[in-house]
Length: 272
Image 1 (cartoon, rainbow, N blue to C red):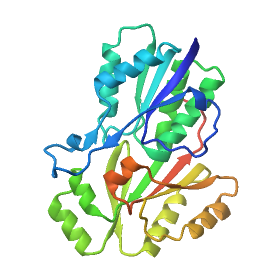
Image 2: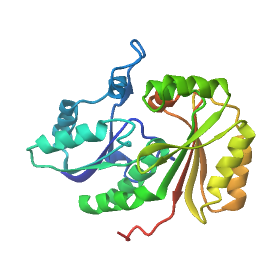
Image 3: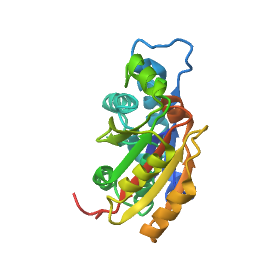
Image 4: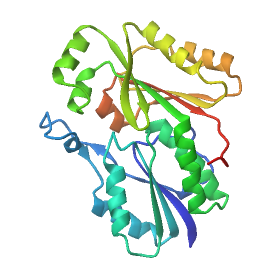
């Protein structure tokens, strides 16, 4: 029986497909409810989540092969999946050891955490070491989101409908930071050039990033990604830069024109 696996949700995005330990990573589906009835009574009604029972079923299946299960979910402010996983773990009575971690991030940020944990798992690290590693890395991941279609934020409960309407009428491009697991307004810009400058200024706050990634919606703004790539390559020649299309879950949550920036700092994995 294999010793440990990582269970994450389908909002995850990886920077490379064949990372070490990929076979020990399992993904539980996380979907978004179609807007057949909007607005919802509560933001959680928009999510078609794996239920507590679904998590329990996954635990039973995985425990046939693994002795330990590390669950790393997207930020609790974006989905109650972490809470449901915790409830299922509390009810679990079989032999496997289960640990649940709220990543406080999503998409590529979540993927970087899972990749790091999977590589350590493939090297034989025990589950308590994987959990420590992930928790130590969480504060080193920073995400910005530009969400021009503010009606999506209203539907998700982050803005009132009147705020969203006024913002869109003014043609603003609001930038939010996903900080400590919560989406917080940072600034508003008026043009894509100013948005690119804001992303560059944010990158400048780091001295030696581990990875920089741009994520774009399925119908993105025409941001000049080549300029951003060149900026990162010139500023940090040894730092990988990648561009990704945002997954279906976040596209439904933030809109198809959403653009995100992910920066992960290097850190001492042995620090606590």
